[in-house]
Length: 337
Image 1 (spheres, helix red, strand yellow):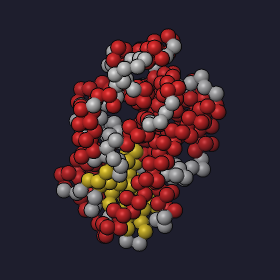
Image 2: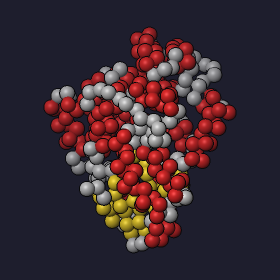
Image 3: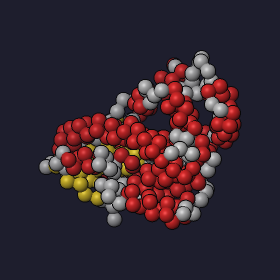
């Protein structure tokens, strides 16, 4: 689904190292969309708690958390935030991230030992499960991302949807460097350099669990509704990246909704249903699971405090990390100029 595609890209707003610089050229779609669509995005975003900004402090008594929303791919615009947070991380008791070096190592080991985590060894292929038109569109999109159709045909649908959510230019950059170059990993590099412990907020296999229990038709829906936007994914990447660096975080989510209304071919009610499912699985449930570990780490840290870095779309919203911390008695202060 375009919805899941956007959500997957959002869920990975925040991945690894300094050498990868994904240079995506394209049109910022906010500049060309009809005025009524931009107005609808603004209206839907207006009352969202903490809709703007990617750098905050949460404080309750002596417990202090510096929170930064991240983007998972390389961009030279990350550097000012890295420089700003470097001394904070050096003084902190821990850097909290979605997945740390140990979790990344575990994931790599698991995928090497068991390729069936991403590839279905038997049963009908995606070529057999999709219509001719959908399969041709998928073949073209996966070829643009360096994956031959014969390989794509055996991939797990959730992984195909993930690939469709990443623009071809980003895929090429990762293929060249082996890394995504996102803010999370730049900050982890700083933590390792200064000896600040890195702690994971969730297990290494979380992403697999997020899609457990989907029906076969729901799996195909993830692909079908991703296909329309996959054809202009570089423009999509530029649009979402620009919104991130402008700190206009929630418009990233509502942009995906409006794009799905216009281009997915789905009824609006179905778009909203899938958006709700994606938000629950990819953001809200995870946010709630992170709150106790964040608070416990902050309370244990004393005067040092902790830094938490995770995908930017986990910050805003009624079930966002900031609102959940506020509900637990934390005062939330934006730190950006």
